[in-house]
Image (cartoon, rainbow, N blue to C red; front, side, top):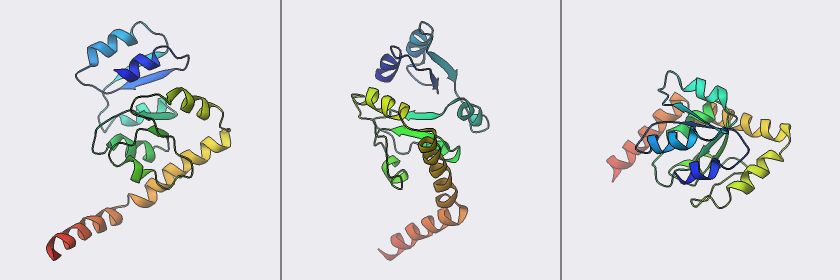
Length: 157
């Protein structure tokens, strides 16, 4: 809700996706602000239509183990702004320049401005790095190896 309250007063266009306890509150705000559009919930079969609409994924979660949408955004080659939630720090550790959102959103205006001032080349490079990192790290072989290493450590302890 903090993020929606923040975004409603910005000139940029924002798409909101998902479902949850605050949906009716979010819809009340979205319906009265032209810069916000609620797209609803996307299952794994239709998530690509969400990523087709956006350039930047904004993850504002304060507590979450993944979030898996971060990996999906990497696969889609999207620019990611995120809180340091769950596995996001590890997932984005390869980037030279990261765009970390503070939990209280106090740096969101600055991040929006920074991204807006990046050249097309810089944005494209970050998006391509995200896509390539996904393709290299999240292979079936790497995932199998990771599970095998965990199992070995458990069995060896």
